[in-house]
Image 1 (cartoon, rainbow, N blue to C red):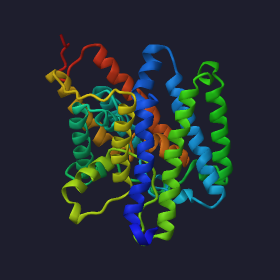
Image 2: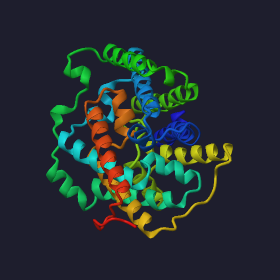
Image 3: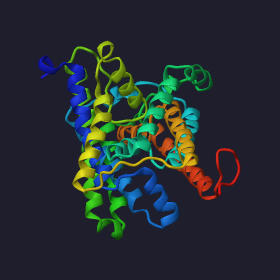
Image 4: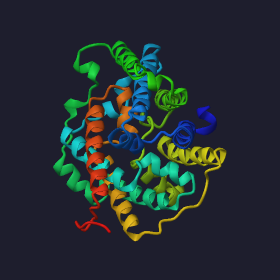
Length: 349
């Protein structure tokens, strides 16, 4: 297979496969991070949060299985192979959460809305990609590196911190999570939500399995990663402009896969329609939120999908810290919008 496609092309195919699943889950399964938080804060229901929790738990079980059969080595995962800074995760998570509230969706959600014909999401995606690259390798990178130096001693999983084997710890944590999520009778009756949680799990686990196999059998030493958005959106924009001078990879395939899967899902549900922003104030808020998401995700070393699902599945200690920060940031952002506070600090009409 590698002789036919090459490392990058095969990784892109694996990314596209999982991306399509995540796009379908967004458009057909109601998989939306901000929607889950809004339901919990204002709707009095935690069903979509439990959908998230079940996907995380099943992903941990899936990664535990891969590890037990020597199909994956957790220490090679992107989130465990490099160090991180707890303050950066907190600050980046708060920025991402506020930005998510201002735009109305996360990076993955913006791609899914773009796949459904929302032109507002197209502008948001552009700003996310540009701001992510500005923070990763552009002028904002200097400030990020100075403010948040990386601690390489933190590059270990929760299982390593406990001095226990990874697979049993991940399996135990995943099992407890599944039991907890399914303990609510109301959620247990939501067979569609449970089914889409399984689909999301397949996307995350297949990403780890595919990139690990490519890294151990290929020639380009590609990083072992699963799905994440923000920096990969920037990589996709750069690739479309400099295709002859760059190469395709897992992240680019994943971004394109989400758009394709969301388009397919919206067509199946007959919900595809072109939409544009008619309120300048709304567009201004969304652009500012997109900037916060792109720069916040790079600061925190991952977006809500990257840290919240991919990193959580390999027991990265940064993942629960980021999820909490994003939740608090989103709560503040939603409160600001409901209170009618504009970017100028005055109440909107």
